[in-house]
Image (cartoon, rainbow, N blue to C red; front, side, top):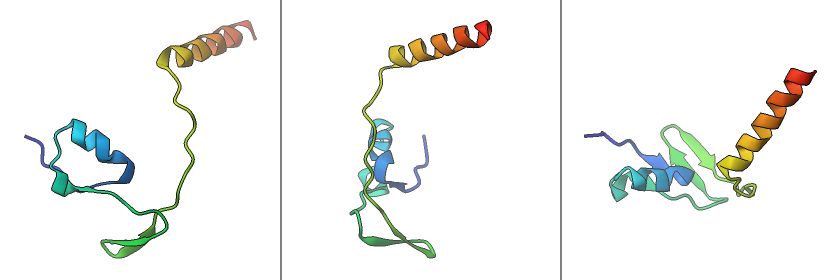
Length: 71
């Protein structure tokens, strides 16, 4: 059995997938200060890039390896 610590922000769904209890999950409000231990943290919004499929990553890696072998 895992002993869960408090999971914050973007890790929530990972924790849910691992059956973390909901009372150990904390969702942040952006631009609102929150106290974590001795610290006061303000979460800022971030624009993430579009997800990329693993097979697309492997194409990039394979091309990079072939280029490295040519040079």
